[in-house]
Amino acid sequence: MKPFNVFVDFTTGELKPGKRVVRRLSDVRYIFQNQEAAEAMLREGDPLVYEVIYAEIPEEPGHLAHCTTIIYPGKVGQEFFLTKGHLHEKLDTAEIYFCLRGEGRLIMASPEGECEVLPMYPGTASYIPPFWSHRSVNVGREPLIFYCIFPADAGHDYATIEETGFPKVVLEEDGQVVVRENPKWKPKR
Ligand code: M6P
Ligand code: ZN
Image 1 (cartoon, rainbow, N blue to C red):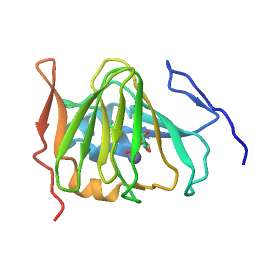
Image 2 (image 1 turned 90 degrees about the horizontal axis):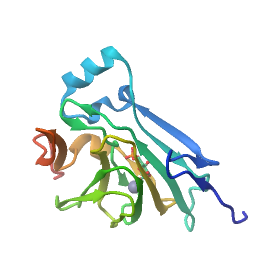
Image 3 (image 1 turned 120 degrees about the horizontal axis):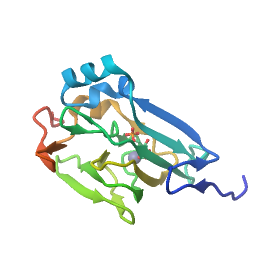
Image 4 (image 1 turned 180 degrees about the horizontal axis):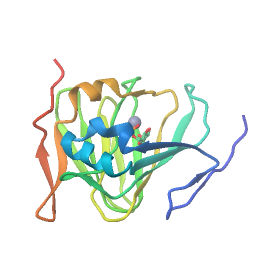
């Protein structure tokens, strides 16, 4: 394989050439706290929640995967649009998120149940240590766009998060962005 460039558009999040994954509300409805609000929204349509565009890199040790993520502005009930969130299948692998546009929060949880919520805004480079699960949230009125780099053989484990959720949720209350304990969080035993 030879060295190569991809081009990242900071305004749209487009990464070229790349492989796009599209997540609509119907694909990710289970991630939201308020299931009734999600079903009610789905009766009106099926909005785009987020897209990920991956550079074409072999999923092999030694390589670095990289991608952009675009989370659209929106809410389900009081909860802002967010990603499914995952652990790496290879748990001892880290990741970096570099924010290009918009305003967000990065929710991370350690295996011990510690939780950190970092702000994301253009210029923040957030370090996700090995073993920490991660999910990002768009708390603004424009698309949240960020660029990520991680070991290409890390893999995505969604099943664990589907079972446990995250310790915290990011909501809008009285026009403010607030971080609350997640009443549905199930710590892993
Ligand atoms: C970031 C990276 C990707 C991830 C994407 C969406 O861009 O962490 O690996 O796929 O966010 O998050 P998720 O896979 O949890 O839906
Ligand atoms: Zn990751």
